[in-house]
Length: 305
Image (tube, rainbow, N blue to C red):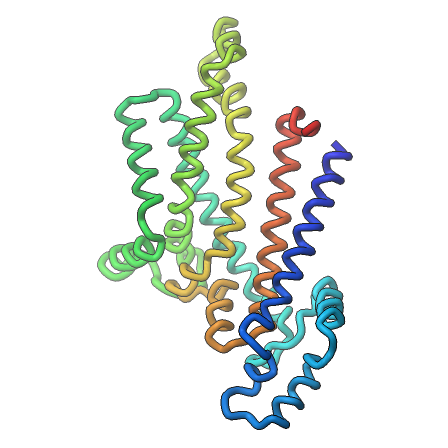
């Protein structure tokens, strides 16, 4: 297990280093950052002064090493527009996005895993067709449209839930449903396919022949093996939720990293945009690493792969 952990950790570090290099290059994708900071109509001497002040006149390799060293220490520079340390801004908004992502993935798992298990227990039944229809609708329906529909019915017409903000736990119900329902179809189908494969295996027939209770066979023997790929998928989808929350946070005006990213794009605040991409990417890499280690713990055969 130790060798497997060290191998996965090395891969994660290489991926994180590659992401940091791509993230750093963002500042030069749109052109000269000094011109972007100075704005249109700025004088040449002002642009040159900004270039020297922010160190854009130094070699790119030196800039990258300094930026990466600062990022490792948690120093992402200062925001061009807010005039505050980027780290303070990000870590003030990060808990909101993490809470939204956790609520969304919890909603998706609570809904999709039971649906997938029951659909596999009774294949081709009316419930199985209902679950598959629900999955198709969830995957085909745009997230922003579903979010606006929830706002219209639950917020405007019935006045059951608040529409905007993040002041209380009620503010996270509609965003979590809108964000989590998009993940539900993939998890449900994977759970159903895994359960169908496991339930037809020899050791399940042996367990039934021994006279074990159906619920014991279903949950202790079948679900434990069928859930292994779901763990990896859930970790990946949770990372996608954090990165893709910009639409949901903008619609519901939740002050998380997604809404901060939208604000940074509008203001052309490059250091904040860089930091958001890097932080979310590192979180995604960590989630993938945790999923690999958890799968190896659940299935020892994966440790030799």
